[in-house]
Image (cartoon, rainbow, N blue to C red; front, side, top):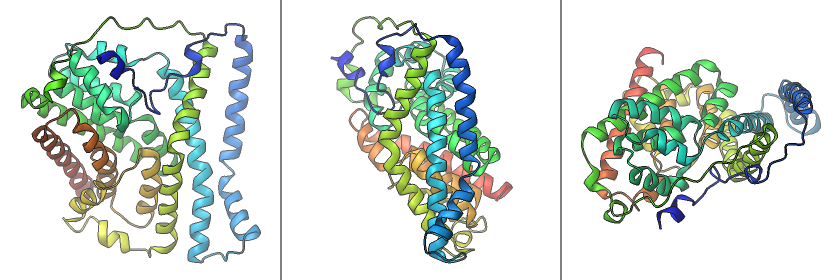
Length: 365
């Protein structure tokens, strides 16, 4: 029974086709030649996106420079290929790295770890391990029944969707390394701290009874030995699977960001989500919880908010709440957690997010 649940996959966990059939006939020199040529072509296109979007908006389309609608259209035409190209590069690269990992290997690394050391390792593994909200239930069951402590499991479940390679790669590409580094550090801190607190509270009896009654069946499957070409195919298939699932959220996020960029006057976001008002951080968290988006969809909105004067702390709190505390994910986790544990999880994570928001608004604005 457990094995069938653990094998349930989502967009972030679909085993690429390259892991089934190997192809050792591809010469290494072809790969070494194609890689730099592909990166050079990617960089050439990427660095000319701004000029192309301006040409398309104001020369080929009937929009006036400086108009609200023109600014929105330019933002959309610029950010759409920019975000998609960043996604392709990041997902492909990390997809190759992920070919060395598996859910079984992750569980084996975390099982039996002491609380704090396990929290740190789980949060770090969450960055590079396939995970999204729809896989919360099978991963939770697999971790708990494999002997991974509850608090360590939560550190992983918080870090994986919130501080993953897509979030960090897009933040770096859209708003710079400084914000990306701050987000990574604070996100990992929230994941580690929240998991440690939940572990110390000893809430294992608030897991649904049917989960606690399950036991792991059989040994972990033997992983295939993959060639370099197979790992590249793994990365390519990861791009197809993940972007095929998230592209609609990306377009919606960019469309919202374009509307904010073109039509929201300067200073409005500073007044609503600025550092001067204590309630801006709680408001950002409250606004984020009912929303459902992944990192790829919410980061264009974050870019627009920062560009319009929203404080960094309030904006990061908004982003974290959308990704880590979304209502749909809580509904999914309710299948395996009793209401009290859900409430503790929300309270602990929200407290960590509020602390991050207040800290950065006070120190950096």
